[in-house]
Image 1 (cartoon, rainbow, N blue to C red):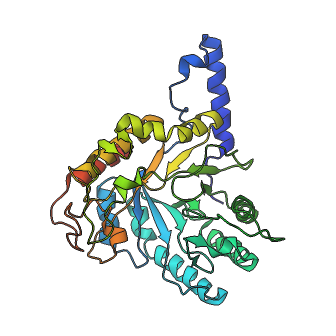
Image 2 (image 1 turned 30 degrees about the horizontal axis):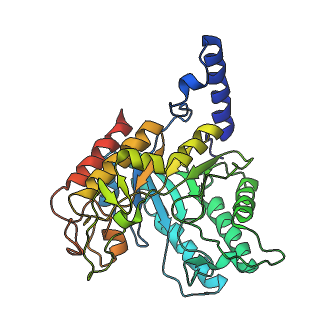
Image 3 (image 1 turned 90 degrees about the vertical axis):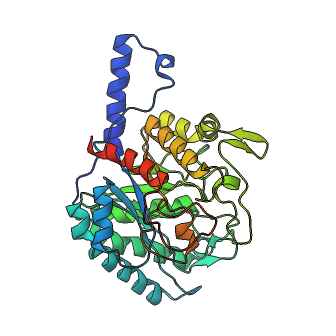
Length: 369
């Protein structure tokens, strides 16, 4: 069984620090603006590996050379809507085999993995809703899927996190006996994984993209990391996602009815910070980014302000995302730090380093400090 630092250690270290503050005469208000105390032995700074195909060793070696220490590795593949369990299970087996083929290269480069589920049993309903929130058999298949993954990787030191549900969307669930809510399904899956003797850290994502943690009460379970994705305001980060649209929104600048800059960005995510500080839990920003073609080099400025915010708070983060080869999937290239800033400039990465990539590498370098 892998030995990983649990939330118990986190809470214990927090209590000890609180005692030291009390003995030194410091009040809570004296330390109000400081980030939650460091309690994990490793800070993770990395990138998403958003692909369903084999990853060449040269790409992993490149990330290692850039000092990336975590990849958010997607279990993600094309599947027919409402595909039967047997077909879905074949897909998850193939995805695990794909990762297995890269483990030696990941180990050699000291890169850890956050396994992220991007394809769910039954697929997606219209409106981006997960079918498993509407059908009990699909929920059972979801738990069985993670049992298979956990049994496969519970002794693999390279795999340090399981992100059970990427951007889950469970709105408008039917009132049906036996149908679990998103959080109930999450908790059932966590306990199924723990029953196998697997203590890998497990990532909880709030509802949909931004992560609704404001009113959330942490689970009474060890080893849970809480995650939010940082893309707000969407009018900036997701603008002109069609070739016939023109990008017009800049950062910093007026977006909607507000002026957006570093201060406004931090204020928007203040509830995530408050949730982390009040509950002494670890935060993992699993995704953040801005479309490359935002005017006036806005993507660079947005990334810089995001990362400086995460660094100040002591949060782990993985950029979205790494796209090393030519692809017509603009879901991969639009936010790639290796692609041009021209609107829909082309499917291939540049043969020169962008200022966005230089920025990311400068922060990834902290992993070696």
